[in-house]
Image (cartoon, rainbow, N blue to C red; front, side, top):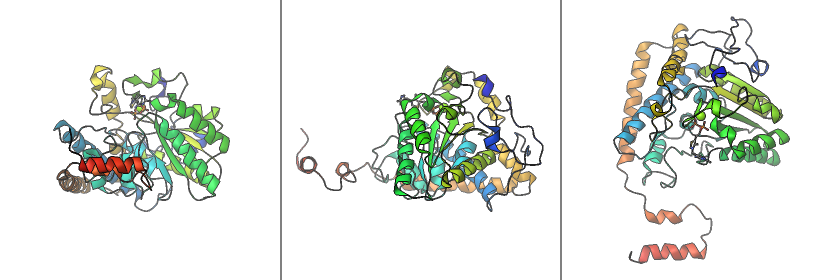
Length: 383
Ligand SMILES: Cc1ncc(C[n+]2csc(CCOP(=O)(O)OP(=O)(O)O)c2C)c(N)n1
Ligand SMILES: [Mg+2]
């Protein structure tokens, strides 16, 4: 989808003055606040105290964590991993706009949001090892993080199915009259071709539910480019067919992602219904550790997108404001590396999952059939 490359189409070139309204920029424009060089193209509204620095730290941490986890996979220490490289701005900018009591339904690359919301690092790492330290007992594929405390629901492997889960949760909030709570529903560009996309978007529109959909358009669904995914001019425009506003945001501008998502979240919380946000970004790495993108795409495009790195852009913005220095970054990265190593060391010593856990955490009252199987597992010798 050549037309949707950042900056090529209707990108805002407004000079500082009044911040453009992302709802007015609309589904065919591109809402952005900071350009690739870290310069404001529109005034950035006042952020909660320290948020700018926290966002950079979280993005740096995720990039470092992704690289370490990918290394573990290459060393044969975990089986599989998918990075969010290049998408940290879209992921964390949107994720930071939700409140602790909201419910989030992630797609494939939002693990950083679980950490942002307080999921312990050991839990993140143990989910990828799937060993006895893993609270979910190795029952999920790696990268399917979940954390009850932070209201972060496990991603759903069949693409798009989380969209109807998110839609249902937002409906439940309405039915139960929990006015202060909303849902964040994530999806990729590829998931817009799923049946659940239609079902979820349709009923969120009909019910005017308190939900913000965040579509990370990283321009690829494994080897399928966005141009082969849809004939629509943009992904955001699809929202109009479902009776909700569609916003299109520069996904590599973490502040634009935060501001747009916060506006949509406030709107949903005020009872004004759903919003669909397309964050235009790029998957810099492979789809997962099982993928080699050089087999199906021209990697010079990836190199072009490296120049639009969300981390560098935000770092430059902070440095220009005197809120960040090279020394701080060096120190932060050294500490992050140590934290990651320490957490891996805690998790990796864990043994395999005890087969007896097969029977735990699923039923409030175990049916007789399972009690029988549990008994046989414990007492019968394998043939
Ligand atoms: C129903 C279904 N079909 C196919 C797959 C295999 N699959 C896994 S990820 C993926 C692409 C998803 O692309 P997108 O939604 O753009 O998310 P991204 O990986 O780019 O973050 C596919 C086809 C699947 N998991 N589920
Ligand atoms: Mg994609």
